[in-house]
Length: 192
Image (cartoon, rainbow, N blue to C red; front, side, top):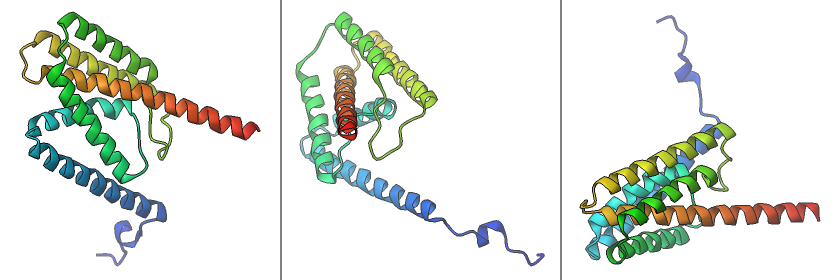
């Protein structure tokens, strides 16, 4: 060796890098513990499979649509549990005809295309280009689910997948309204 230290050996983490790593571990712990708590509850309710399917579909859409973000761990856990439990219950009780489902999913894709995504207030807003990519990707994912559901009416989790998407789009609409009201409120008080 030539006696010089490599860049990796001499480089220390900046405060920003340390904060990012700390935030990553907090997120992993927070989300992981919520997943585990809800897994235990849904297992006790004999809804484990439905819970896992709901999460898979929800994450595939929510990553591109955003939604309601709560600031406290317990309120987020309670909201998420209620949200998922409601989806499972309604999917067991309310079945729509294929044409109605297809129209609703088409409307959901369009709503996401023109409304989404809504990011957390603790994160920076997406750039216009990122926004466009997220909207288009989310809408395409919903259209893929729509085609899957239309072609596979006998799929065991058919109704569950449909209601996950519907509930997520309703949450997106609510999040958009909340965000616009908050921005209007902040702008009003800045001018006053």
